[in-house]
Amino acid sequence: MTKQKIIFWVIILVITFFTRFYRLSEFPPHLTIDEVSIGYNAFSILKTGKDEWGIPFPVSFRSVGDYKAPVLIYLTIPFVWFLGLNELSVRLPVAIFSVVNIFLVWYLTRRHIFDQKYSHLSYLTTVIFSISPWLVVFSRSGFEAIIALTFLLSNLIFLFEFRRSGYLIHFFFMFVFAYLSAVSYHSTKIVVPLLNIFFILTNFRFLLSHITEWYTRNKFVFLFTTLILVSVTVFFVQNFILGPGSSRAGMTFLSKDYDFTHGLLPKFSAHPLSSLTSSIGLAGLWFKRYLEYFSANFYLSSGLGLATPGHPGQGVIFAIEYLFLIVGFFVLLFGRRFFASSVSRHFVITILTGWFFFSLLPASITNNSQHALRTLNIVPVISILIALGLIGCYEYCRSKLAKSLLVSFVILGYLFGLVRFVDFYTLHYPVELSETRSYGWKQMALFARDHHGEYDKVYVDPQFGTQGPYTYGVPYLYFLFYSRYDPNIYNSDPRRKLGGSDFENYLFTHINWPDLDHSQNNLYIASQWSLPKEVIGSSQQKYFVPFLNQSSGLYAVSDR
Image (tube, rainbow, N blue to C red; front, side, top):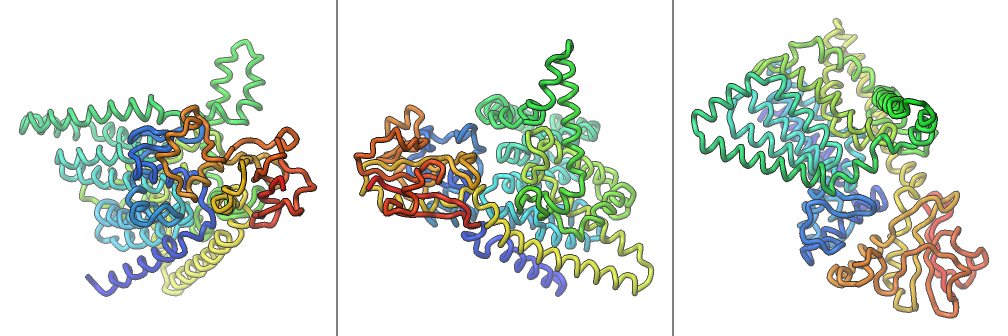
């Protein structure tokens, strides 16, 4: 290994440590409900072999209103076993897989994307990918999309390997990682099949010739492999397309979007051809949502949602990268000399183009505008395009002075972008949006864990918010998580079998103060909206957790 390569990997390791692992338990400062759910279900599987609902080793985990993908929960089990049930054990698997993604991007671009003459582009792409705000934000919390991206990158590596070698083993692993990616996160159920079908259709003759060759060479191996792939496909369709795993898609599909149901649909329902016009309107809304992912604000100011709505925030890439992203897209289409010729340059460009456009599709058909997490699959392509744009601009500069000025401009732009991102992520985001991350439930859960035995009942109201009780949380999972409540006891509770979430003397329900029996000695954990004004700040108030912006928060008050 050359001195330059050693320096490169040292830089990558330093970047990795500070962006993925440094103070991982503290930033973001609070586990989301999804992270708590993943952690407690992993804890439950570890202790009982069942999830929180008593289902043995499920392939889809029933959650609050939908079903979670299983891969991250099962990957979290050994970390919970080794480190205990805490913030670190829940976040560490995703952080580790995020690091694996960096090495996979380097390997994919070094071996299959860029020509050997331009191998330095693979290192540049890797650096851009490793410091991407888009990736860093989701690498430090329990997001399944990071795991799905790992398997998607592995799928593409074997796709290129198969196109180069024609070996059955490469084709087999291509499909193995495709399925693993598809069952890891909901958006890859669309991206991965489309990308692999696109590969098959554009390389049909190549594939057909090798299928014939495999069958002729060893019929048994070919038929056995085919049987495995067909069986896995049937299992995948039954459980993740038609089964419980499809519930999330039904909940978030574009037809459930507020703009469609309350804006467009009422206008179409009065039309004689309401079904046709509604379909046309839905298609138009989808096209609009798809085009929104080409809007500058997504990339420059609001894509990551690190600030309150309506205020300038952080885009999914650094501002300095936007121009090079645009240039890079044209270089992708016309700069064929940069790409590997070991297969064909046309093949590389085709796959990258398909990867780009398919990655935006899942988010565009769901009921959110500009959703960074659902488009995470595109980050490696974006990093490749930025690297292409940088090298394209650098080569366009003819004089040494022009090249020096460009390099200085890029370095200063990245330094400014890094400082701005760190400011948003460590200062603005935790404070301004602490409510949206359910801040306060951890502290209340720990307080109740230590004091619930002093009260007859502990009422916990899931509704809270700064402006009113408009946010509906799922506090019971925080109380289970931070008390490390025995899953065996929880699963055997008859209230759980009826679909409830109460356990011991905890009651998770809306608090209507006048209707409750205050002759007992009860504890009430709720926002200010569910409690009389006179008890707040009085001797009855036992504990208070304000949101980090000091507006409102959660209160614990008692009858006495």
